[in-house]
Length: 249
Image (cartoon, rainbow, N blue to C red; front, side, top):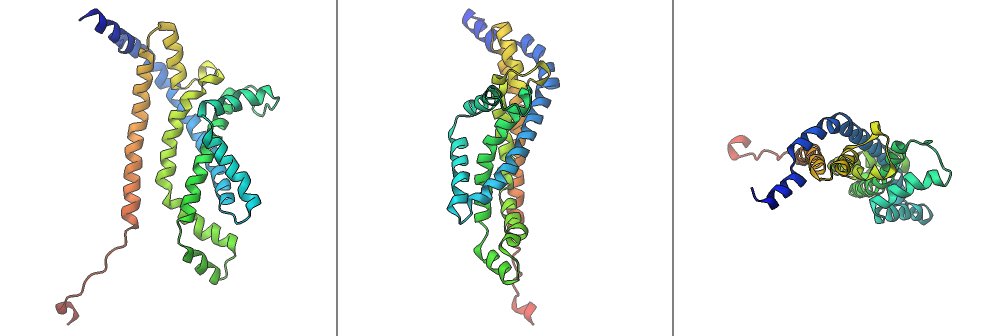
């Protein structure tokens, strides 16, 4: 093999380094990545639901803070938001999680996802036909009862595939929390790969991280697509049978 190809192979595809780092990635990195993503999606869902209700309010004073929140956290780079929340809050004396960088990382990701999820919720709620509101009000339900029992459940059901897709986005976004200096047992996939790359001087550990990320995200992507198709197929009305003259007689 030519020297150039050998150097390329050693840099990216050193099998020994990849096999050496995989056990730690699977035992430590994958669980931490999934836990971080799950906590962030719970935070983001709660924030997103509250903010989405504010976004569809007829009161401009209620809408403006929600719109500002969405614009800011969707407009800032993810890496900057993680740094400002994870490093900025403790420096400013706001130590709501003490010195636990892992919790600050989950909060930062949750705020980011809350901005995106709020828009997903908003689009789902506003996609529900206006007649649903009018029919519910005519039955004696108040506005808030109608939103709680009729509109919001239908809107959320319509955006479930998009919400599930956001979980994949969080998994990939969690790779940026290495900035916060996690403890050895808190490190996610990318942190482990980054440390190993600095020690070895090659990028083979990064390739190993890429393989692990793909093993997580590709099956989830296909699962989301299948879930979306199942919901759409289930939403199709069943055609009524056509009665022929023989049946009518």
